[in-house]
Length: 498
Image 1 (spheres, one colour):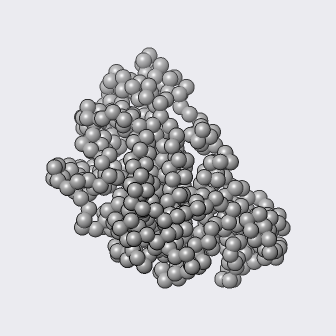
Image 2: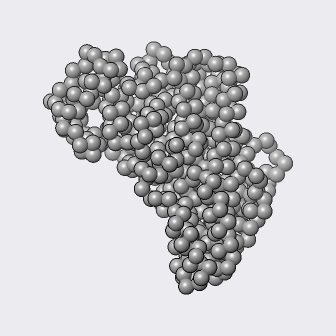
Image 3: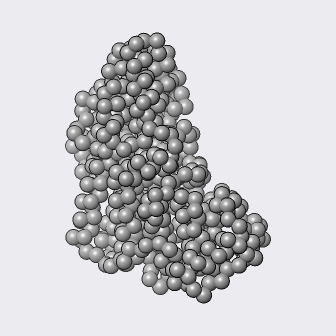
């Protein structure tokens, strides 16, 4: 007991709207339903949790997390409630402090348990038709500060795998837990193939339609990680977990579930590092950085990119370094740092060219090809054009190159290219071409379930205002207004999860 109020629990308690007595009764009822009939919580105990910072004994934290998840319609974890988990967490500097409330990084044996708990709650929300909303993103600087020393060190895999006799491996209360069993190389190969299928579907159709399937697969992998496999298999299984977590995060970001997405990116970083793949951990963090830029927080994105780059190790291939540079350049463009952006993109181009015909790319990098390089350059220059209008012509050049190189099955990227090109044409005073490419984007957008494409279209719509008197642009504005989905996250998520 700290003697200080648990402000995290207090805030969530206020949002939930329960009385202390009501919460006590709900805890007892949920605990009894999940195999703990002996639990007897009362109003005074709830008061001590909130006002005195008392940490309840197991399984109460898991029960509370499940109750708040159901009530608030978003995933609420034990850390969100202000409780620090037991075990080796005490060895981490500042774990559970105000600057690091989630106790990052997690102790090695926590990663599989957190993965399984979080995915189980996420699936529970989807089953009951609830939506993700109301949570805050952790600042990029706070994430990078908490994880810096940990990401720069290498784990000892055999010591880091979960153990059955560890009380931390108890099933989260009220959640469906995959009935795990040891697996072999053929099963892992099948899982690796499923990641490729999910990744291709996401690139083609957006994150909404397959998000639950990816989360469910990740939940099963978390159960498998509860068994100690031979080191080679265990590393591959951690790799599957990292790839699925990145996909779950990217799909969540794609449909606007931002706090959920960030949690998956953090899980992916942990899983990749536990599997000894530091470049994959760095790339997972770079996804969180891209999310920050999309949400208008480029300074925090740069904090994350500094950690992603330095923590990836010397084994990171040139093409991986190239994609990290393009993300960094986009952040610099968002801040109007044109000279820095151009220098960073120049480095990205050099790294990409140096990798031609070189080492075989890991499967998670195979989506980044020359078209993607030009697409990211188009996005960076188009973003810079808000500060330096002359950059619009360069953005047009790269967007056209990207479109000419796009392979089939990359519809979402193609939509982004069209929007970048249309936006650059509007800024470059070419409304006729802008209208053409904006309409091409609109035609394709109805075939995907990507909220990000609509967010970018809204940015482009802002640029049409100066040409509203033009008859064709007036018609385009009307079509966009009719096509834009509601900004209400509840309506949006229901449509994405059907």
